[in-house]
Amino acid sequence: MTQNNLDSLNETKISLRENVAEVMRHYFASLKGEEPCNVYDFFLDEIEEPLLTVVMKYTRNNQSEAARILGVSRGTLRTMLKKFDML
Image (cartoon, rainbow, N blue to C red; front, top):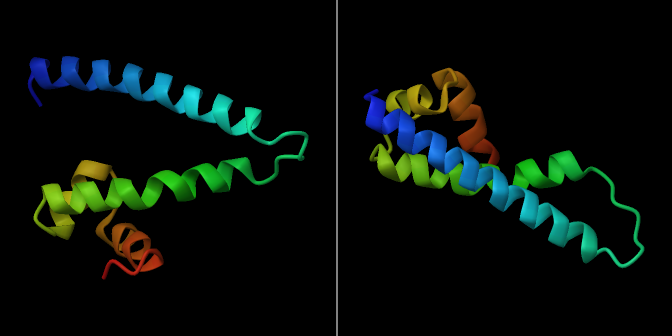
């Protein structure tokens, strides 16, 4: 990965972090007194499928390349894809 790519990734990471914080603040504000539960699982379920969709499209469904980009094993990627009926 080139330095430009790393710089771009860091800028995206900051922006993503800010967006996640904003979404979570909005989520908590919208509860209107309801007790939140399983927030971690809820959030992961919300981001995992679109993340996989975009990465698989970017790699033209090349699972080995997608697994490398995501930093997971190919077997783990396949498990994730099956979870969302993407295999």
